[in-house]
Length: 272
Ligand SMILES: [Zn+2]
Image 1: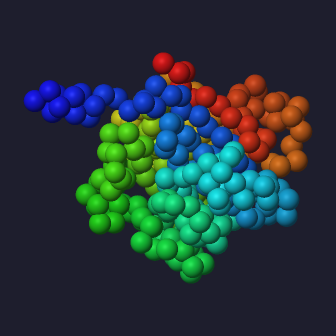
Image 2 (image 1 turned 90 degrees about the vertical axis):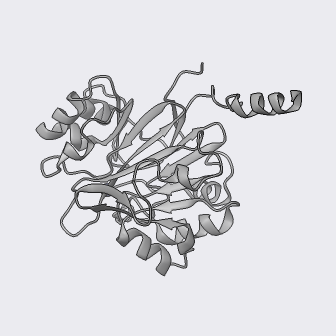
Image 3 (image 1 turned 45 degrees about the horizontal axis):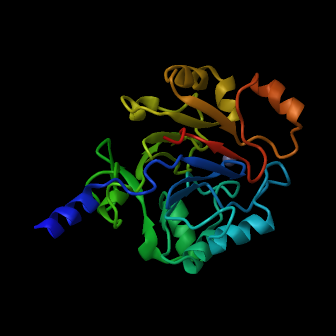
């Protein structure tokens, strides 16, 4: 009986890392890694195409760290990709990470992303394709797009919750935005959402503590309105041209926080 009580107490005790802060590590362009305790989710990294030097791609050292799951990238549980453009997604890089890391991370993306990943030799059994069915948000083979990964991962309570919903980027491009909730922090990654043409109602009623947005977003009325509609969210800009000087970036962003340097970090929640 005492043993059972001790076992129960052990099971009910919060995991040792529950009070660790959520940390964001910036990789390049819109590529970030969100980590809390033993869990980590990457979004829009690795990427490979700088579009003739316009946007930064990960350094060779960072690609190696991503592939092997070593510092400063670290082991990953999931890689999320907003869309197929090469400044956000590297099919063979993603395939290599899934081949190299143990256990292999999951990959989430629209059909264009996952098809390219499989074509590059990626392990399709690690892939999930979010999709919208009848106007509601679903992931293929799963009842709901929210909390999808909690259903398949060993630690349901602590594993980050991942919610994928589409927002318009460009005609013909399947584009997904992601909300990752870990350590009690809800983070929205807007990818390359085109605010003038996006239907933001798909995220109605959802709270965000942090919104990561492409820098042009805040310069457009609809984008600024979306950010203004979430006054309590901390907003951070990215997708800033590789060669923009700090002064130019700061002027362009009117003092808003931004990510521009590979390896820079942010603590998204205070340690308890
Ligand atoms: Zn882009």
